[in-house]
Image 1 (tube, rainbow, N blue to C red):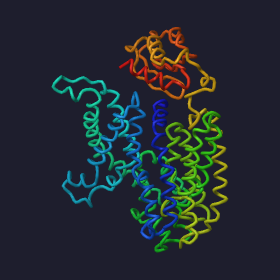
Image 2: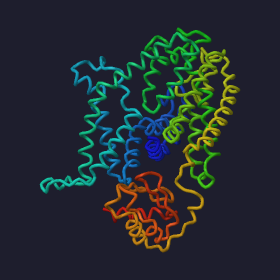
Image 3: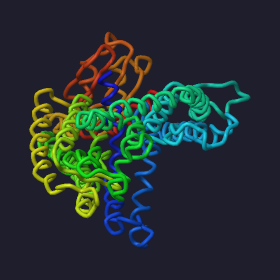
Image 4: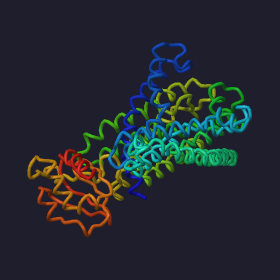
Length: 480
């Protein structure tokens, strides 16, 4: 299971890399026009729409990126299958479609279906697309249907599986969404403790997109709280109370997560620091400036789920502390620097300046906790995967005939009949095989290979070196 989650986390890196710049563009646009969100400024509108093109369609990026990353050979056909699944599920479960299927007015449709285009559906669609590709990419059909054989049948099968998934979600999604709304309502009267519980589950639900269900209870008027609306308008709010469900996010988003990113950078392997520097820096700036945390959170939530659980817990603690103190701040966009500055003029603001020392304290806590956990438990945060060891980077192949090298390796692993799937990282050829007894290490090493690792009963890693991509390409051709 852990190996599967880590592979999923690795697959998310490509789409996640698109997000930091987009969130920064939106933040700048919102800073230029914090009240109109572009209606008062053409430049602000341009930046907000440009950033929103990616942020608002994060699910689509995940569907395609995960489908390609989780496929056996990273083929683009899998990405197309992921997109097919996304379009099928989100269309069938859109509020308008549900209203038509039930024969009711769209206003009577469960609010759950208004939040169907989430990261969770994107991840689910990607996994469906990849699974269908891996299983059906080599399917042979009768001659009359020969055109749809092989990879061409993948999208068709994916559509069928996605219809079944949509049918299940048709009944399950409103129940889960409704349960979370009711859970939120049940903790309203628990004060600061409830604020902490809410913030903990808010972060915990980020991967599913169902955090919107809890947000609707506390930030909007589902249960009469309307924390966000009352904070900025002052109407119906109570000074010292209103804003308690938003305040605790500022120390985490402005200081905690950026400090966690610094810890991940410092604990990355020396040779990988340059690779992860750009991603972590951009994601940290995004979190601090705009309060958009997904680029950073998705960078480690699947690679190190235990660490993400701790992050959710720290967020809950921050919310509890801030709700207990005479400090209140709020946001229209998210808990970043832009909204923090704007909070000073809000009717329900109370000592927002105190969030700076609280935030600095949480920055230290995040850095220490993240660094200790990453090192102690050897967590696979960005830049710490087992993809390459320093000594592997100096491997020199016997010659540059990659076809011959791949052929020798294939012979050594027992032929293509013994190979289930092929993948590669920076320096290793990663194979899933049927039987280890058919592997002849002596034959494999005769190709100039420096080492072989057997991490599992059906897993085999051949240390090739930095030229592994060329060998992997030839290897894939041979097994086809």
